[in-house]
Length: 66
Image 1 (cartoon, one colour):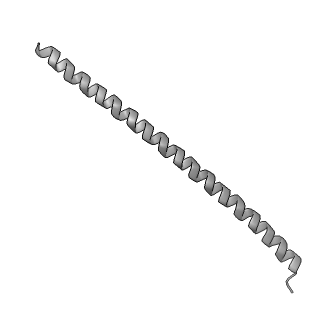
Image 2 (tube, rainbow, N blue to C red; image 1 turned 135 degrees about the horizontal axis):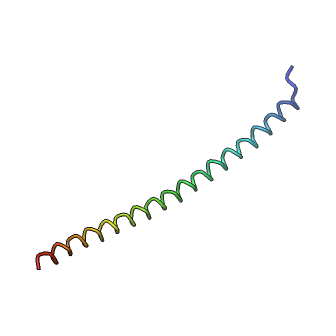
Image 3 (tube, rainbow, N blue to C red; image 1 turned 120 degrees about the horizontal axis):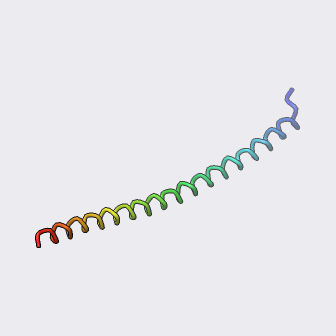
């Protein structure tokens, strides 16, 4: 025979664990969102540096011709 109190206790524990896992998922999603924003900012900075380097090379070529 299954003891009702034991099943209720296990159910309570499972529900608490479910809430903990849901919170971990929420926190992980927030971390991913912030990491994506950081990655986009880094990519923008990389593009800017590459553009500045390219413009500098072009300017040096023009100066060498003169």
